Image (cartoon, rainbow, N blue to C red; front, top):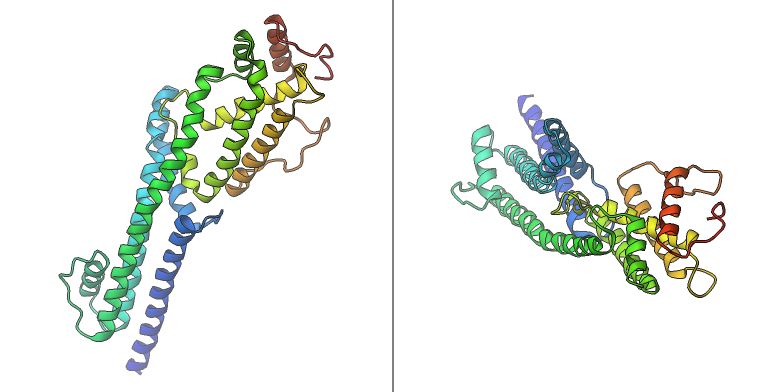
Length: 321
């Protein structure tokens, strides 16, 4: 009877350990390797858990600069915590596997698992099954580290390309950026005819943003080096400026501001996909004039009056604009 109970416990321990190792490995592959917007619970739990700690810490900040400086560490620490979590779960899973194969004492099973996972080699398996398990655990340990190391260059490359455009916006729209300032600065240097090229470049930026910020979701939480900059506010500024251009400015030629409207569409699609990935509620099919917008009429009137006073070619029908 006792032997049957031990056999059942061994089988259950082996299955639980195998499932833990397989689920963790699959989570790592979905997070790092698969080039599409996969959501994994383990990754989400780790990032949420670390964020709770940072939110508690951020309450001590008295200024936005202090809070931004503290939150700048959130994404890097979350990634490191995620890597540690992967290794811990895989290590504990193999503890159960070694235990199921006869290594009944907890400490020797833990020692053998840790020695195999980190390829230290100070604990030697006693038989062929545990030797094979040790080899497989070493493979998983090295594989997880290799995946994370290969993940970092891709992530930082995406971050660098994103921030290059965000930084360049300072020249055109000020810091912090403003849609009205962007249009006024172009008008002052007689550069309104160069706006279509600007909308085209940001259309490309939004397209890349959608791909990188859903397939490499960790890059969403990496903040700009300057606390006055943010890819979120930059995206909003460009979309506002393109919307004002399409709705309020008299086009220099042709019936429509084609590039501005294409830029708006690219931005809406990109931000919608990112919001869907992170389960952020939003109106997926807004209509006009029934659905509310975030811009108040007084804000629009202030921008309209400022553009008109600066001499920009605004449409005379303010209501239609």
